[in-house]
Length: 366
Ligand code: ATP
Ligand code: MG
Image 1: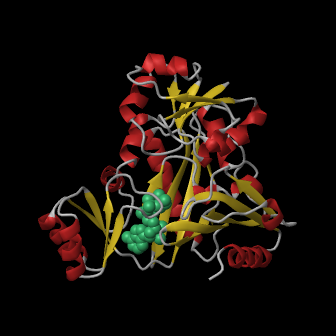
Image 2: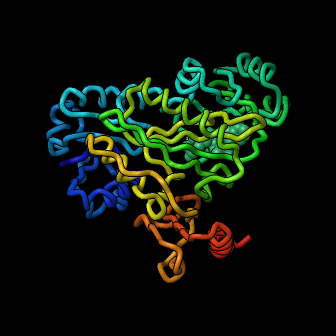
C-alpha cells in the first residue's frame, strides 16, 4: 500500500515511521526548494512539477492508494482534482474549511458548536465594530497562515487598536475576545473510511509564547461531562464532513464548559504522547483510518507527558532516561523551531509531572 503525503515536516516523518511496520510505503509532495531533512530515507520525495495536472501528479507520486496532508496550507483545488484518481483523506472540503479561521468559525457556528466569542473584520470600521461587540482585551488573528502563535496580535485597549491599524490598515481577520481560560485541552479523534470512530483521552496543553510547550494525558481536573459534551460535538463535525483520518480540536476550559479555540485536520502536536502511551498512536491510527483498516484502540492505561524541544538541542545522552523517549526530527536547530520532543511515561502521575518539570528546567533554564 502506498500513501502520498502533502508535506515533508515532522508530522510526515512520524506518519511514515509509525506505518513502515504495516508495510505501507510513502511518497512526499514538496514545494521546489523545500527542506526535506525530516523525511530523508522514509520514501520518495517528489518536487511539485511546474504546470503538472492532477493526472501527472498522481503518476509522479507513484499511483498512491490514498493522498493525505500533514499541514493545512495546501491547494484544495488540487486535492479535489486528485480525488478523481485516488482517495483523498481528509477530503478537500474539510481541509478548505479548516485552513481559514473565518470559514472554520462559520462551520462551527452553523453546527452550533461553541467557540470563543468572535467577529470578522477587514478594515478599521469593522475592527472597531468588533471591539465594540467583544470588548477589550482582544485577539486579532489573520484568517490564514497562522501557526505557533504567528500572525496573531493581542490588543489591550483602543490605543493599542489604533496603533495596530497604523501598521495594518486592512486585512482578513477573525477577532476574538481574550479568554481567561482555566486551562487548555485538546480532543483527538480518528474516523476511518468505514465510518468507525475512536477518541483519545483529553489532553492538557501548556503553551508558552503561543507555542505548545508540553502536554499531559489524560487531562485531570476537568469535568468529564464537559469533555464528553465537546467530544459529541467533535463526532458530529466528523460526520458532517464525512471526515477520514485523525483530527484535533483545541479547546479552552472556562466556567461551565469547553469552547473550541481551533481545529487541526491532521495529526497534532498534542497527540505525540500517544507514541509511547496509547495502545495505538495517532500516526498509525491516521494511516489505518485513511486506508480503511480497522482502527487501533486509543486507550491509555498510564499517565504520560510530552515536552517539545523548541530551538534547543537534545542528544540521546541528555534526553533518555528510564521513563523517557526522544523523538528527534533530523532538523537543524534554530530559535523558535520545533526540532524534537521527549515523551515521558510512568505508572505514577506524580512521577510523570516531576520528570516533566525536571526536563523543562534542564532544557529551558530560566
Ligand atoms: P497552532 O500552532 O496550535 O495551530 P495557532 O498559531 O494557530 O496555533 P491559536 O491556537 O489560535 O494559534 O493560538 C495559540 C495560543 O494562543 C492558544 O493555544 C492560546 O494559548 C492563546 N490564545 C489564542 N486565542 C486566544 C484567545 N482568544 N484568548 C486567550 N488566549 C488565546
Ligand atoms: Mg493552536
